[in-house]
Image (cartoon, rainbow, N blue to C red; front, side):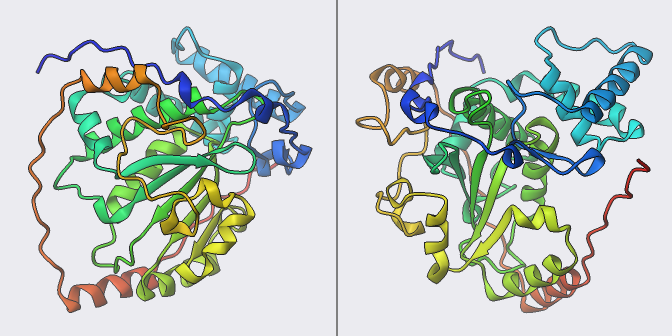
Length: 339
């Protein structure tokens, strides 16, 4: 189907300058820990340490040795993010880079195709508000996730396109370079929990949006998910688990430690009405949430009708098998570098 050429201007998503100017990051937020244990949240307009520069040089040697042509808009921060994704190990750099460049080469990851827009209109993923440091909040409704409705390829395309919009228009280099992710599980049991789709989303984010996650809230868990999560948490990497918090509805007030109530929807304990229109992305800080320009542009675009296939409910036996499988899960830690 031939795509209609429409210019979508998302400048209205940018945070107010006075709020950005008020942001001051502590050194431990920008980067903490040393050498191969380093964790970084801010990548632009900040100095890199000697170890990071050394590893960036090693990365570029591999690029040169393998005669890889990097994109014209490639930056030092791109190099450093590949180093972090490769866990500071030379043996990982080529694989990570090839994966990222292959992703960059897919046009549908960056275009408002009919199917991408149809996906985003469903409310599977959307944005609403910002936290107290102006980081955008991304919500994912797991109850709507269905790989029979949209293929794995569409999930990658649509999420890549959407995350790219948020990164380009909601981030401010050196100030706002991370997002807060709210994953609403809707009390889905393990048999209906969309593990594969989440794996797709996670894989897309880890390499291609490296360093963007500040906090992940897993909300409204079922009893089986809560039980499994406790077991996983016991063996998971402490630094990873620090970013993740599972909360039941009676614990939603804890979200307000980072996010003001007027930035949260009512369903998450806030005062803002629950969103019913998910595309284009809303900026609740401006009157009406959108500019007339973006509404007219979106209206002129074509949409795609999607036939939804209903999933067959899992049996209790399947549920038990999945619980047993999750209970045996072990998270393998990567070997430490010899520093």
